[in-house]
Length: 81
Image (cartoon, rainbow, N blue to C red; front, side):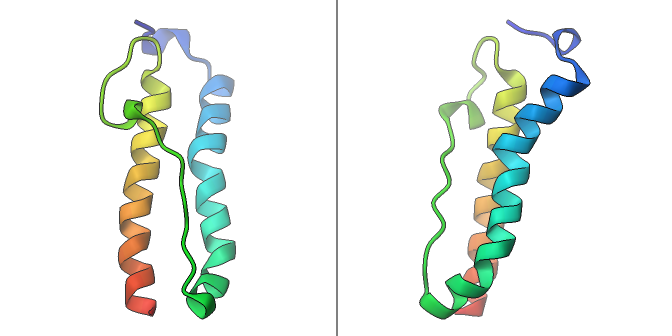
């Protein structure tokens, strides 16, 4: 199992940017259009969001964050409807 000692700041930043920062920014950009069209956001997550998987704990952390983002934004977008 990969431990925290094996991750560099650069590798964590890359995982964070792809799995969490990008969906946050894209959601922000899409919200006005979604409010007008009653559209949907589809995020791709992973079983790693809820289960510890060998060698991918940082990946799982970011996917868990994505799942929480989805839940929070669902509430916000439902209030806008």
